[in-house]
Image (cartoon, rainbow, N blue to C red; front, side):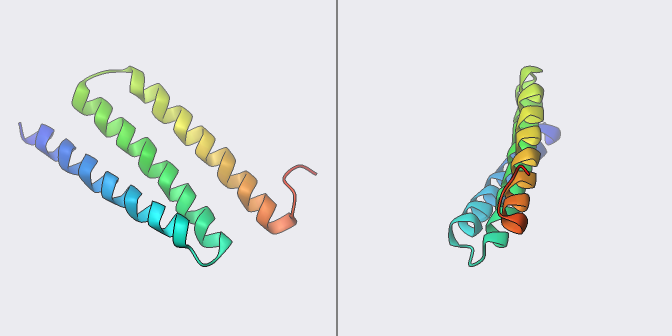
Length: 90
């Protein structure tokens, strides 16, 4: 009972963190702020998927969280290279 309540609280906190990251992503004054907000948004999304998987008692969503984390890492690296060098592949 307490664990389920704590997991739902964590899901709500992660949802709020995702909303704040989306706000920074849309209103960030610098491109670097937007890249960092996108990176944090991916991490929060992966954590939310894991928490929801723990609540629902499944195993399939862990693979989805891994996929979100991998795509988030690759996109962050690509955006950082694009901002620093002007192109991604050289």
